[in-house]
Length: 134
Image (tube, rainbow, N blue to C red; front, side):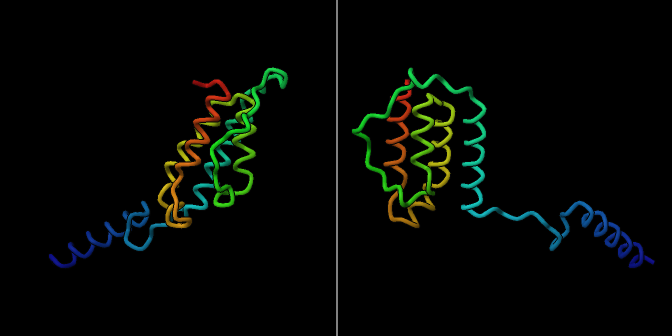
């Protein structure tokens, strides 16, 4: 009788846990790959940037010609253009959001390219100064 009660209790617990997604082997959540995370971060940055009203083009600062050299080929296509667009628009929130992406991808960039995001971080700091965000 005791074995039947214990077995019934274990069975009931297994049913309860499987409904919660916590029963071993039933987890459906997956860890996103770094590329998916970067793409999601870029989409979020683009959404935040487009939500901000554009300033008039005549008063927008233009990037100086003496900028930190970044190996743009090591980053997603369009990264430099997006940062420069935000700089010209004075989009301080958008520029600052790239710092989070640079921090989050530091190790994967270093493993893939042999260098970290130091140059990108310097470029972002210059962008903040040009956009007069400081």
